[in-house]
Length: 113
Image (cartoon, rainbow, N blue to C red; front, side, top):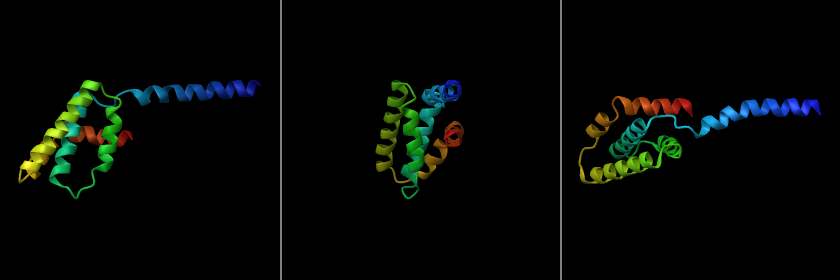
């Protein structure tokens, strides 16, 4: 009986911080929106590139972000997709969009996963 009590207490001490950390955003709203823009530009500029893992991680992060940040990111990605369909050269846009904070945010998100 004592062993069960000790084992349950130890498991709870380990599980509670993990559960609490799972619900918290890993990046700020601005970093999240920048990372979504960067991924959208990369997807538009290089259709043959596999950005599915980045999209999966950003979708996972979207559930942790505020609804406003998620809506802003969705709007930005939609606008980029529409603009890319009308543009001829999206490579330069992708390079500029992914400089600085967006690239760092994606790298951080990939390390945390």
